[in-house]
Image (tube, rainbow, N blue to C red; front, side, top):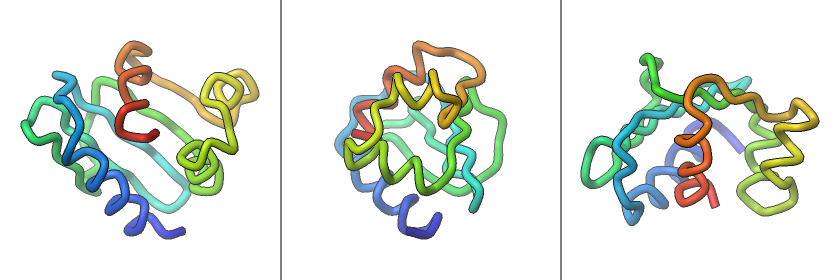
Length: 98
């Protein structure tokens, strides 16, 4: 899966998500997906801007998280998913990523 496909998938899910009053950035080995939860509807882009929460994950593991083949807590504990910033925002990302 490419970063463009991931961005479109996140954009579709974010269209129905409740604004979470923060920004988040998913940093992958193929690029960045920036999610602005201050907007209604939530907006998604590939802008590499500062965010309240940054998730670092490979595209392969991001796909596994999205399909349920990788548990988010196990991904963090095994180092496959790294969270910088507000962990509460990372938890809210479940509505967009799940």
